[in-house]
Amino acid sequence: MVQNMPANSPFNNRHYHHIGVIVKDMEKTIAYLSALGIGPFGMPGGQKWVEVPFKGELRGRPATWKVKISNAKLGSGELELLQPSGGESLLQEFLDEHGEGLHHIGYLTDNLDRDIKNLAKQGIKVLTSAVAAKADFAYLDTGVHGGIVTELKQEK
Image (cartoon, rainbow, N blue to C red; front, side, top):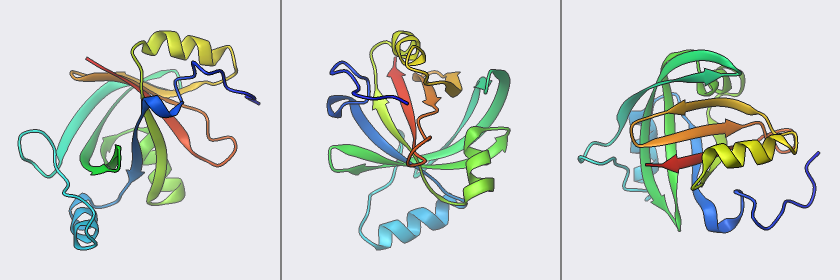
């Protein structure tokens, strides 16, 4: 069990970026949350959401998947909606096992490889990772207590 996370932890407040929520239906979720005054939701280029293909690893095995993504500003960070839309993914597993809901808290890093290696020394494993056009990321197995996965993202 991880105790007394060091001050240079990638999970401290200065690196906080977003809260990731898994949804079944992107359009319905955006409409509902917008009606409550949450939003606006959108992606670069003026679209409400985008579908992004990923090629990476899932629990150490090669995997490909697609995800619909939309973001809204939420305080100093973002609310990230994620709808699994094809392939075997950690997000689809979560939706199948738990339904919709809070999946992860995302943090930015300037060195994903370094942080993964340092966290591995503390027993934290990578659940899934991918290299994408705009950012590389890894979801980490920090859900032992509280059930919340963490994501480290290195923007390009």
